[in-house]
Length: 88
Image (tube, rainbow, N blue to C red; front, side, top):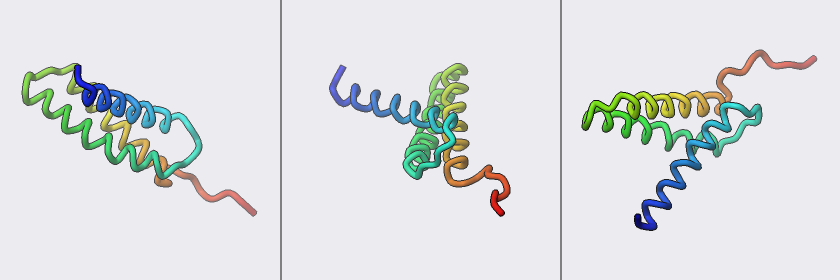
């Protein structure tokens, strides 16, 4: 295993971890939006590749779920899903 593979793997796990954390926190962050904007298309592309190459349903569904979670996290942190403003 090369060092590049390790670096890419760690970055992928960190990105997915950030997206999953973003779905559970109430804080808003533009960094989450930027990370989700990178993770979502990459996960969707790899899901498509897993389906096109080997018809592998578990990988396709799992990566599709990561892509959808990334989009949900980005929308949530962009200000989407907020209620009416509170105040006097």
